[in-house]
Length: 210
Image (tube, rainbow, N blue to C red; front, side, top):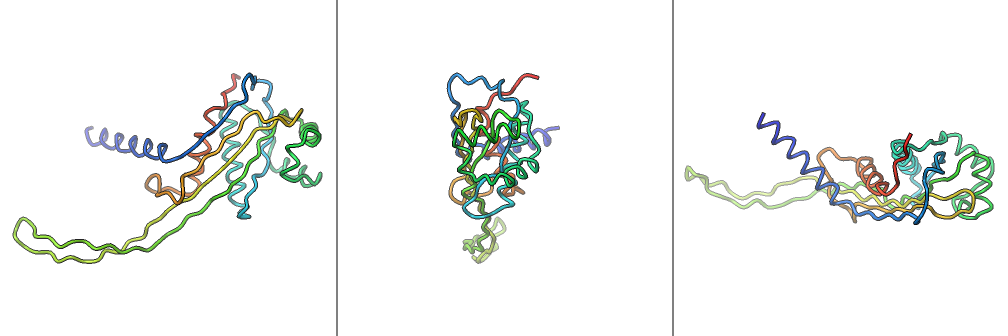
């Protein structure tokens, strides 16, 4: 029982440490009634890296978080199809005319779009020297070099929810792990880091009542 409690405590500390290592900020437009925006379209995120897999992954994470908060979403493949047919670019979402056009075509009150500016995992092979020591039995253990791989992650995301009637920004958020942060917890992946960022920055989006 005690071992189990210690295990749960360690898990709690790791999660708390992970959350603390993520830097996020978000802003909600004052006076907005989000109950009017029950249908939202998640459009594909941009990425200067051209990492399509990362763009889709982040968009899906935001979709899951919005569903968890009670919003209804348009199937993203349908959204992408419409965007391609209409020749929409990311910059087009911010103009009132195009935002209204997109909202009418998709029958949504708002869209969520964003950018993935960093999505990178690096593995660096390192070597460190371990000092020699004498154990309790008087035996000397000579110093030696120890080799190991150090894995670091760099994830940075920005997002915004745009009203399709006037292209006003209802909510905006940003988050990152910091420049090449150490893994937040054992067995962590890029998606795990991204998921933690999305979950944290979406904390200011209200949960709708069903």
